[in-house]
Structures are given as structure tokens and as C-alpha cells.
Length: 362
Image (cartoon, rainbow, N blue to C red; front, side, top):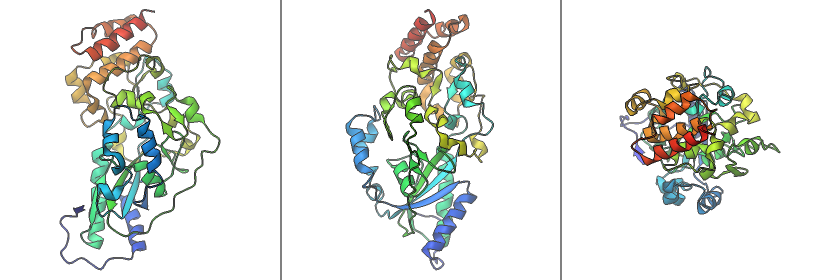
């Protein structure tokens, strides 16, 4: 477990644990985190569900999830000495983005998941969590900790639930009564003995809006998503051809999918992002498909520098957009755009372009 750096050799007397917990919440707010909760490291209630999900192969080709096994549900095995987990929430819904439903309704526009319109959240949140840990060390002296932002086998939703940040909704996202689900999560694993927060009760009730609205029927049971059918997985994590049967259902979604969040009644309480870094860049909130499809690899890398989208690479970018173009109403402009990529060097792109051209020719 990492020991804080640049600490005073003679630390001040340790504050009362309750006072320290209150101070941690205040420091976290000052760093831009909308909410903070503290839990123990016991995820034994979450583990059977995780193992059953993996056993059914619902993680698709995300083989690292199976490889890490129970490290995800046993924080003290991932980071020995972990006694508590500090979980934080950062809201990301950009206040000035084009209306999501309007973009989805226009098949000539590209829909990009709202979380990916601006800068990559990983580094931003990790730096702020590191600052939070350093601020704690100023108060208590050197202590053991590690900071995580979707960067290791961490069961972040289960930890957020146990820390009282919300409950896990039927779409499998964490839901808060006063903030919906448009937020990122981050954690500090620590050896500090801090008071823990109580989990909140669930408030989905009889609502099945997210299950009913999923374009590919990926929510196979309340709280259970089969990644192999999920558009977010297919457009981001999946490395190969997108199953032909699912392509028509993807519509114009080229990177991620927000349908289950858009339809969730609790998101009427969602709070806009306070961080300007999440504001849309390069018009990605309502860009034309043909314009994005024309980007060269150099343009893709340059324009998406600092974006979470960049990591899928240009080939998957073209693959995803080709599917969306195949789903768009037939037009000469789209056929010309697709034809320009018909002899692409990679079989992955060529196959999806051929599929799209066949759809355009109907």
C-alpha cells in the first residue's frame, strides 16, 4: 500500500475519526466531488452475483474480468491492509450539450455517450483523489492508501452502494435520489479506521423503464446486463465484428449508449457537471456521421487527444460509424462516404462497410 509522500516526520496528533470523516467530505467537495461515502472492505454479499455473472460469460471478451476473479470483490487481497474504502462521486452531465434524445432521433447524426463528450475522466479524477489523499496525510501523517478510477479490479458500484452513495438500479448503474446516475465513481483504499456510512434503500419500485427501453435487450434481469448485447460494450470494449443481428438495433450510437439513463425517472434530479473539462469538444454532441467517418487516422488521434474515445482506435471508430451509416436513411452522400472506405486495409472495417452499403442499397 502506497505511503503518502512529502509528509512531515513529526505528524500532528491524529484527529477524532468522526471529525476526520467530516473533514474528508469537506476536502472532497473542495476538490469538485459531489458526494463522498465511506465503507468497510467487506463485499461478500456482492461476490456471488459477480461470480455468477462471470460464469455465464456475460463479460464477453473482457477476459481480464475473469482473470482477476475475486480480487474485484476482496479489496484487502488487491491492496493488503485495506480496512476502509472512501468512495466519491463526480457529476459529468454537460449542461450545454445538444439534447440527447434529439440527437438519437436524427439518424444522420452521431450519438456519443454523454460521459465521453469532453476530456477523459480517468486522469482528472485520479489527480484529485491523489490530492485528497495528500490532504488526509497532512492531517494524520503518512498512511497506507491507493487511489483508483476505473483502473484496476475494483467493484466500484458495490462499494458505492455500501458507502451510501446510492443503490444499484435495474440498469446496473448506481442511482442517487438527489442526483440520478450521471456521475463517475472513484475510490481510495486505505488502512485508516474511519466510521462507515449506511447503505441507502432501493427506490426503483415496479419501474422497468430501463429494461423495456434497452435497444438490444441487454438488461436480462433487474441489475444484470449481458455485456455481449450491450451497445456500450459492442462499441467500446468489443474488438471484433459486431454481431450482424444487433447492428440494426444500434441506430446511430457510435460510442456507448445512454438509453437506460435517459429514460430513468430518477435522472430528472440529475445535476449538471460543475467541471468544464466534461463540456463537448469538436462538436461531438451532435456531429454528422459522414463528417466523422471522413476523419483520417491522424485527424482521429489529433482531435480526440485527451478523450476517452481515443483508446478504441481508428479502426473501431470506422467500424462503429459504418454500422450507423448503414442504419441511416438511404442517400447518395452516405453511399459515396462508405464507398471511399470499401477498400480499407483492415478486414474489420471492410466487412462493416460492405454491410452498410448493402443496407443503403435496399
